[in-house]
Image (tube, rainbow, N blue to C red; front, side):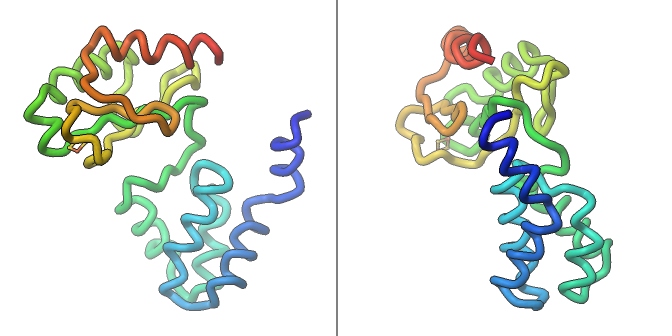
Length: 164
Ligand code: FES
């Protein structure tokens, strides 16, 4: 067992939610920080925490579900081992992002907000990576790459996928 998996076992989602609520206060406006705490810890917002959060913050379950689904940054399922974020903002759109998106989706066999069937890659849109001068831009596991062509994308992804 790795140290991180041991930490997960000792730190179940409800405990993380409770700690975040204790830190932020039992206020409705604590919802976003609490959801961020869960997403940061588990890579998604575990469904079993929603009734607990709703009760603690005096919200309905539908309120909490609504916020989770409104903000695409929140995931409702664990992500793949690698996160690919494709910039779809204006500068990248002008420099070939639509064609790159078509290639990426076809290559991975998934659409935005989906994870490959082997659990390797989650594809997400992003709206500017601050790398507009080198558009189109892609972020893979937190590292930004510019002037990404279809061929370059395949090469960039080959290495992390090979390590999986
Ligand atoms: S628009 Fe894509 S990096 Fe800014």
